[in-house]
Image (cartoon, rainbow, N blue to C red; front, side, top):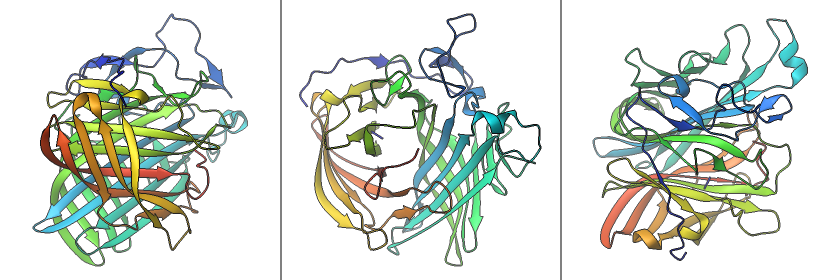
Length: 379
């Protein structure tokens, strides 16, 4: 999700290492009553955010997701991976039920491995009601799960543990943050449109040292590399002007990290609320409004599965920061058609980066997410 130098440069204070406090978007106790939509809170005002507590679930908001991507290596063999958990609250009637079977919320997950060396892409999905312990998202500590798939914090309060498997596709990774979390947006509010409810709380840990195992096609690999974690929640309106988004999460070898999202509007054009964040080597974060960067498509790819035509190469520039990058997928076909969970067809894939940063040559890696090219997303 995600020209000229008219940057209203707002330096967001980098969050202290896990266990410290910072600003986020929750209402303070004793402040004005929170805005509500269908009985759920709407992100609208800052509040103190504490870690690791606030890695956990926030059921007062309707939609929430925890999203991990990374690039890993086993010797000379290169991989990308994605593991995402979604929590979607149900309507008031279901939440009021006393039945242990009542689906007060639904938990969904997507898991994918890109075998960059072998030029193949595999993915799978799950969906369950959060009833009888089958699936859920804990509010007291960070743990979200569907059956034996899970993302959670270890007892040390720092290590993120990821587990998922389906047939000959599996992941078991331990991730240790190399940087503190970063809150995106202005004042801790990440805007997605002009309406009060078109906003979220959006936090990233842009670098996590990662090691563990990947299984694909009956072969197990001991892997190590670097991951990116996003955690976002809010309560969005049922109708939106946007038709999809292009999101970039990139790590550069000069120590800078870049997140950008472009929200595409019905009829063409870009939502003015589209923005990004540049994270420096020391963890300080610079908010990037739409006016601070440009994104140009350089190639396209048509999916043989959905027929959708996706961008498949980009030139991304942040002139005020001396950033001029070319981004290319490692594998063209990294499309997920999730008819068994979220019902969204989207492209989510590993990418390579090269160009200049601060006037010097730079290389990098990351992930790109493209939604709405095969129909508008429902979340």
